[in-house]
Length: 284
Ligand code: PAF
Image (cartoon, rainbow, N blue to C red; front, side, top):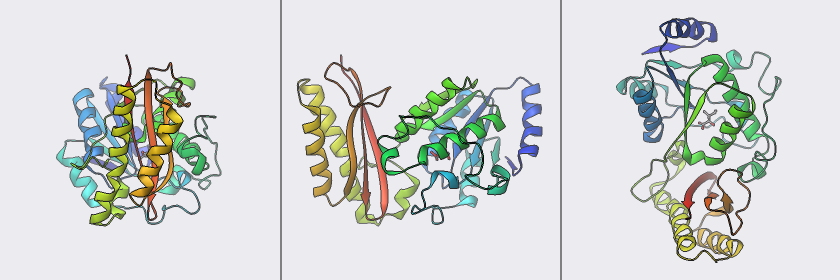
């Protein structure tokens, strides 16, 4: 597996790949790879000729009081994991390579409205940081397909909209969330949790499932009331919920009684660790 650290070196290698008319699958990550990331790369491996993973802890998507400095970094293990699944190349730029004028001082890509709700309401500027780095990676890598986890459902929806709105010729693929046996969604941030907190955190998915089942059983339930009960349930397990929202799956607006394609999204803090999860429901 080749490791590229500069845009110039990566572009030179990708030119040869393009000359051979090979399809490129891009897996953008911030490293500290777990089984969830590897499921993205495995799907890319099945669907594309040449697999490129990027590892870049993007400073512009972290708020001033967030965990950019402490974000878990495990470069050697990441390289070993990517080698084991036959990834062709990994792009590991440093901050100067991506933001020569300094993070936050360059052109910003923003998907309005959708970026301000849910996680965006308490993480101001987060999705602008994501949209900007993802657009840069799309332009640098010129991939045919890019793979993102459904765990970050709002991110995935925003990236699909950005690619569509900006006419970027890339197919965005969402990959189902990998979970612990308790149901807890795999996340790099789970490494901040103590063993007993890992069990405690499973309340998020349990509450999502319970709420989804209630909606499937009775279409006339009042969504704001269900959300209120879910928030109480999460709080009583010792987490500090940020939101629990039953939304229409494409717009991410609060679901109306007649909507059939729903997504329930939640975010909560366990200690200082922010956890997110979601579940989709298709009503007939
Ligand atoms: O989901 C992530 O790991 C990041 O937000 C991404 C898409 C790699 C952009 O930095």
